[in-house]
Length: 440
Image (cartoon, rainbow, N blue to C red; front, top):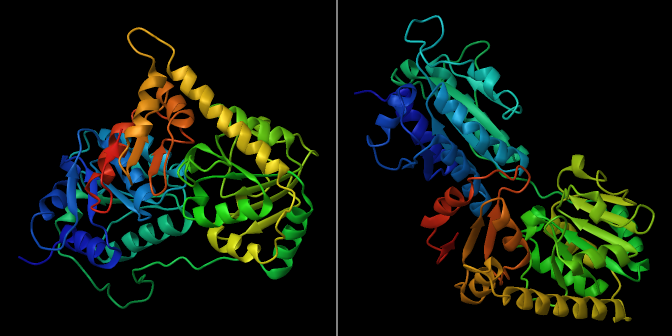
């Protein structure tokens, strides 16, 4: 039997894009792809879920915990609709996820239209950067390569729709060389983005002049923990963490004030109320009422996405760049603060806060005080654990009571704050051999 479109699709995802897992649920619109999973070696593993929404959540968590693009698979109609909540979770938390969606047949070529919806219209908002329908075998290479590349480059959700009858046609690995034919090559590597020296020097002047420096880090700083800690040490700063940046720094560092915002800590609130300089790194923290009063503090912000700069607080210097690389470059221009009284006051506040948390956890309750559960969990977590949380009350304890240690990972549905993400978030990374345990 010659190679089908479905065979070629899975092989290209595995061979050229390194996709090891695809999360999905079977259905008539994707019969061709489902059948292709077991027809050859070196294809992605199919992780069958109980509901398509879980598949999208798992793909989002896969992206969060591995840095790779997550891939989910669903049939047409209601199956496609079920993907939306998880795809919005990925879009709003800036995670690369590719949705592959089936359809009963190509429109105009016959077939059963029961359960069909207008898929291009359905996905045009959540996958607004890229949503395309394949109509010919020769388009598959280009469409899947573009979907993967755009998802990774823009850190967003993309979608490719592949009708079921097309899935079972013969593949065209090399599109015909003709006028108007599109060609593509696989692979994507993000270039390191750095501000120029003049911008770094301007930022350093602002930070060096501050006497009470506060830092706020988010998901964009998850890979920059060492650099954040070193900058904080030089500047004598305290560090607050947006919810998605909870794992950026361990909570046992005495200058880490914990979460900020609606689920934040008292030390984080005090840090923002009393600072005279604010350095934001990799965060689009949405609640400006928890930041310093406008005009109170001079501001510097670092973000890879220039669209995120200056939208929460008026920044004096805005730096477009990778968090870790930009902080390393900035360090050479910073002056170590000799007066450590600000840092010492932050550390006293943090120490008192953890004593308050312990006291609250010990308050008797029937049947149990939930804060006690999280307090005890923190002491029993295995090294290098991954933690996930659902939204609702659990997110309060996740944000305030759990003390993460070095090399732990943690996440939840941050911006969308949807219910139901905790379990699929935990399932997705469970097979990572480098991580010992996943805790929900």
